[in-house]
Amino acid sequence: MKNLSGRSHNILNIRAIMDDGKCFCAVRELRWPEDIRCTHCQSDKVVDHGHDETHPERQRYHCGNCNGYFDDLTGTIFQGHHRAL
Image (cartoon, rainbow, N blue to C red):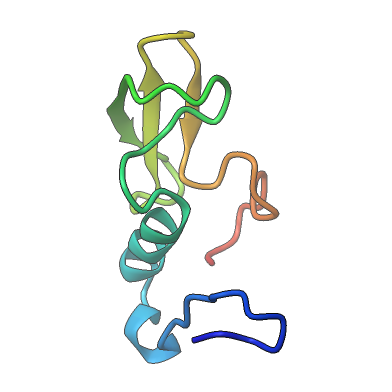
């Protein structure tokens, strides 16, 4: 769908992401449509590194290039919030 400025926007069906697992999956798909990239160095040498203790649906990652750690919400407006999305 395009808005008045001619830019494309993804539209989410809110009912389809009502639980945390589906919501985090949607965040990942929107944030990294092709491959997950390190939020520190943009490398694609990223591996899964477990899950968050308080939100098990939130995936953690480790970058083999810069040795950094990040999760699904690092660098977003939701970073550091300890509430469900």
